[in-house]
Length: 222
Image 1 (cartoon, helix red, strand yellow):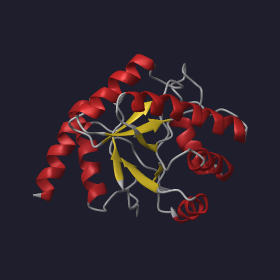
Image 2 (cartoon, rainbow, N blue to C red):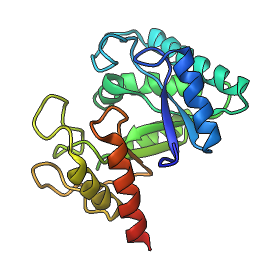
Image 3 (tube, helix red, strand yellow):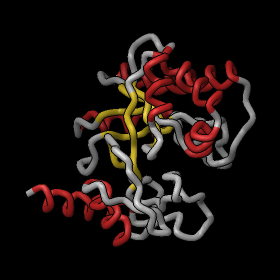
Image 4 (cartoon, helix red, strand yellow):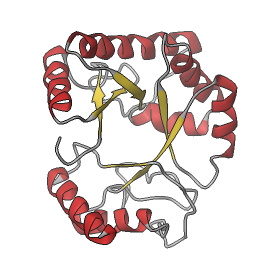
């Protein structure tokens, strides 16, 4: 927690359980880390990394159910959820399916108070910005230190070569993202403007990657 500014906390549908959620919320509160609801398809066995066919209202209900669980626990411990970050297959699917993206936006926009929505930063963010405006949403665009990128600015699918970056490559990519020099795994320059940088908690050596990125970025800023 001391190494991050915001924590995407699983809400029980793809990972986590009430006790893990409580422990994580308390750690985030202790270290003054912002809390995000990490919502997903109801796919606990597949860790939310398998696509599912869900109706629009069914998906909206599932998303709001997850936000409710985390936000309720957060409020009971004197803190709160401030943004929503879709996970895994849901996160990737909504980049390719505008109807799905609209359902996600509707779920967040109809929450009883304002929450930001996190989306992948790509070279083609204009449409997402326009949709966000229609729904009255504040968007945060995200880049990944530990994942390889395609030429289109999407993440290389897990299981394919160069999908996951090792420590040295992740630290180098974080620096490239910060300086506007991000490239795909094939060397194509990607023009993205992210607001936040992500490292997956289940990436091998995630803790070491976070420490190294912090050290590298602080040295650059100094």
